Image (cartoon, each protein chain N blue to C red):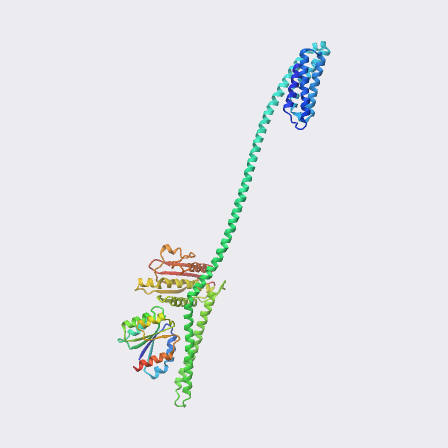
Length: 454
Length: 125
């Protein structure tokens, strides 16, 4: 029974080394050592033949049974199960054989070969169980390794994810901050833009002031003069009527009365003219969106052409230019915000006068008669207003920039660079188009096309 | 005696004709009108020598200004008197006009009394 005891010792030692227990292992350690001690003692006793064979066999079986009990019942020792499982048949067969040999040696002699055969198969069983167990264990280990690796990968990806999340949060915060900054800047720019538009409006109104003063002064002079002269005419009539019937010149009285009537018509006409100018000026300076109304574009163009001319004349003594009007009498009234289109006309006309009427250009081209022409034309369901000058024209490389905000060819401080840009926006807002035809040395034509709205 | 009045405002003609009604009827005064510098020169060139003796011109006119007209008249017909009538009575315009040979400088609104006085003085001589 030496082999059986060696197996028991081996299993006990295995349990001792591959324990799952942690807390109260000291107790089990002691027990396992005792078991090993008993196993060693049994081998010693067997070798020295100090104990009878039967007792030895029983003790050996007792040791194995105790060990098996431990393995099956104590959860911490379950690792030894496969060993017990492998050697159990062999153990049973040899133990049974030993017992029978000790109790009934004759009978044993008869069945000896069966036991040998059984022993052989039990041995084979033990080997194969051990073999498969080893293989399974290897596969399990590989699995475990894989699982470990996966776990590692998972943890790494988790760490990466966390890092990414932090980065994303940081970037999001930065972007949000930038967005807020941009929004603030945008609203500031919008405020600045509306201020600029207002400033531009006021600047063009300022340019107009002299023109307006002149344009109002002229009709007022006529109002004053015609009422004065009418007064004189009435005095003349009274003088004539104070004469005797025969000396009276009735023809003269009739003529004077006719003149007075005409004068009153003139007073009314010039009064209305001044009134229209003041209304136009008020409309021009008014802020906010104006209402669209049916407007006589010929009248509007006439008004702003005169205002522009007199404004520039008053501002710059060296300026001079002629202007012409070529209005289509069949032009229908169009539905527009008259103060806005008025601004467009004023901008274009001012530019045109500036282009051909400035002293520098006139000195260079003394034979040329600087002329600004404003013409209107009916084109089916559209009308066209053209502002032309015979100035130097716009070079090709500048032409594409002229509608850009803040683009100006005037010296710093003289132009806002917003006039044409705003004009373009105004015409677009009316569903129309603002085009320029120009070539260096051939003058410039700005063409406004507007839908009649009928 | 022929007097030429130059102004781009057409109603000036009616006003002047009424103001000088008596003078044109009873005295030897004839008024002619031009509504631009170019037209004024045409009228002056109609007869040689021109029968216009006095020109009153507005300064602020499209095309040829009154000051340009003044220079041209003084250049071609130095014997003709030219006076300016302007809404802009600033020293700049005044100095230029006088330097170019303008006889008088009247500001708008026109004081017809002084204008009549001026014409009367001329007719006496």
